[in-house]
Amino acid sequence: MRKFEPNQISEQLLPVTAAGSMGMIGGPGGSELTDESSAYRQRRDEIAGRAANYVVGEPIPVVEYTDAEHALWRLVSERLTERHRDLAAPEFLEAAERLGVAEDGVPQLQDVSDRLHGLTGFRLRPASGVVPFDLFCGSLADSYFHSTQYLRDGATPFYSTEPDILHEVIGHGSAMAADRFAELYRLAGEAVRRVESETAVQFVAKTFWFTIECGLLDAADGPRAYGASIVSSYGELEHFRSAEIRPLDIADMAHVDYDITQYQTTLYSARSLAHLEDVAGEFWASCDDTSIEKLLVVDI
Image 1 (cartoon, rainbow, N blue to C red):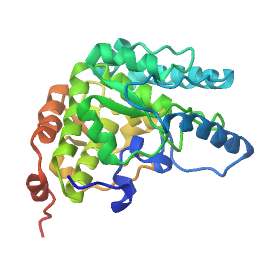
Image 2: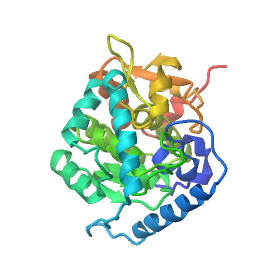
Image 3: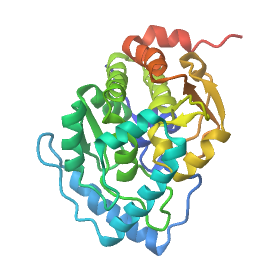
């Protein structure tokens, strides 16, 4: 397999977890570095540095979170829970309940990893920041998920310019606590391992974005979210139903652009979790460079 590097394609095609500072969780736009933001950067780098030398199989480094960080976690997770009741897919809600992450403070990544492993076989691996997509997604085939441990800037509690532990645990961790979602993560990882061309990897990244990161499921009261970037985002939860919502269609994704720094303007909704498995799951289970090349052909 050819080594995939983020700078070989548009960074917009990388999922949030692999996007580093290009990512946007919870709201559009950026902000100038304030004194508090500078303090956040220092704290972020301190926590991220502990993951740099992590060896698989060793205990995940413990982070002594501050009272302010625990308070921030409580504020955001409680607000998200309120939104989830009306806007998150029932399958996601069941998975989140199964994982059982407390709202009273930032959890230790090792504790979440142990819980996940007992439920679906997934383990979390600490990440210091940017993870190349082939490594990030390919590791899913081995039931490993790269997760940051730092928490977003307290000055902007409802969005983050980077993937933080709140996004990783509440968004991805919750989904991976359900067997059927966990299998979809594994299939996406196997697809990345299977394809060889940069174009094919780029397209798998796009399908990952429109499903695992930003996917919806139909419901009687309107589409509901299961995608990690939406369910972990206070702003996206309020906005996503105003986007153009299309029926889940892998081929259609080939011709749709997106911007991870803005609220999504186009989203895809599956009729059910079974439909998601039939469409996205089957695509990841069988795709190769040739089949993806055919999908990318634009009629003239």
